[in-house]
Image (cartoon, rainbow, N blue to C red; front, side, top):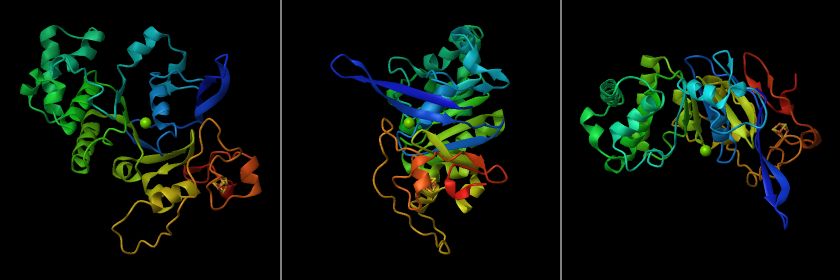
Length: 315
Ligand code: SF4
Ligand code: MG
């Protein structure tokens, strides 16, 4: 609720604070138990910062994070460590996140060791089980990360996140680094695991076509803010925000009846260190008015939980 993450920019001769990057600027949303909420936007829009802030891998500047009725923002470091049993993350680059000097058994066992769970033989048994759950044979336990393909390494990353039986997984672009042919295998695995283990996903991606099938609802981020949030079905069939429309018009569809207008956005994404006033999308929006330049549009429900931040849809 009202999540913000601001980074000071230091510089100048005296190294003082010369500005601030508003990486996440007043973002509010809920992830329902058992659902997949997709979070989409171009690189630098604040989606990873949002995901990491939920787990407090990044300390938010302001806002409140509630997980399972507990105010996570108020927890001590020690309490937060315990809470992280239930909240895990899968990273984009599985190779960078797996210690190259440790074999897979050691990598997967580590969360159990940290949380002092089970005896050594119980932990090893759990490693074997989890390898099979993610579609790898248990003989892989003795191998090292470099001996696996990208897709296999992401399966290992997922297994590690699941070792503690979490409730929520923040998946930060889990398939972006993989070949397209491997992406759907990993997405299917994640969907199967969700059903079997009752998982809740916050699924971060820069590509609308990746989140389409896995997400129940999707939030679209632009320059540190969520500009639209609704069900997957609504977002793709009835997008409201001009930015969402532009993103969607760039996704090719196989449907010959698809007569969507191709929207070409003018200019680049402005710097988050110097975001435009009012609606931060106004420098690129084909529908910009004077009001858009001066007043930030509220993020509001325009019906059936379809949220949008745009003056075109004022209630
Ligand atoms: Fe465009 Fe104005 Fe809506 Fe922003 S508020 S998206 S500038 S119409
Ligand atoms: Mg990112």
